[in-house]
Length: 268
Image 1 (cartoon, rainbow, N blue to C red):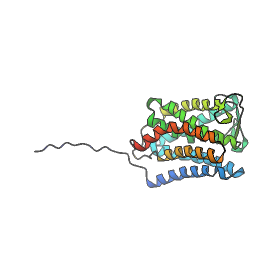
Image 2 (cartoon, rainbow, N blue to C red):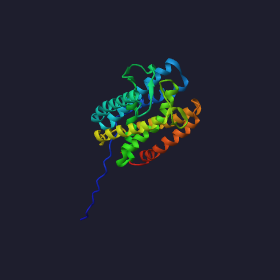
Image 3 (spheres, helix red, strand yellow):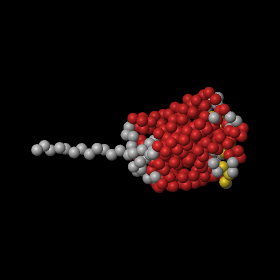
Image 4 (spheres, one colour):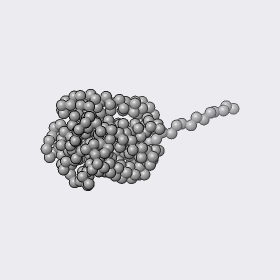
């Protein structure tokens, strides 16, 4: 009589349904397509596209969070992040801390306490990818890595919005490299705020993914586009070649370990 050794097959998570995947990538694709149009339009069209991009990107990331971690994630992530974004922006506009002295233009629409209502949704769009990338590779330092990714992302975001007149800065001292119209304090402010919000979310949001969960492909697509679009846009369209290389080195350097892990490591 022979004895057979049973080696249980490792169970892998299943993917989401084709319909859910199509909707998710529709939202991500529209977010990217709207951003591609930035250098090609101006005036009222650009204003509306800017606002639409933020809402579409926020929707895409909330949907991804829901499809990846469930309702407990999405129903906590959206209000916590939006309220934090609003609160830190109100604090910044009225006190100059932690970002520096700045003021929003009325072109971003209705405001609450001096902050356009669309602005907190930019935080919603950005924080989810930073959190997931940090959870993937940063171990006990999720808050630090996630905050650094957000600060690096803003190296591309802020000059684009300032150039379009969406907000203005008072620069009296050191400035962000290659962007003399943005104070260096803004980068430190984003790092500090990023540390806090990523740290909070990492504590209160579920870490266990659904059995049938969305992959990281949607997050990868948005992060890759931000990196690629920031480089190409600043180099060829916005006349900021120094920022193109500087921002790409910083953000690309931070994201390289994540991309290696996401593409070559365990897909679960």
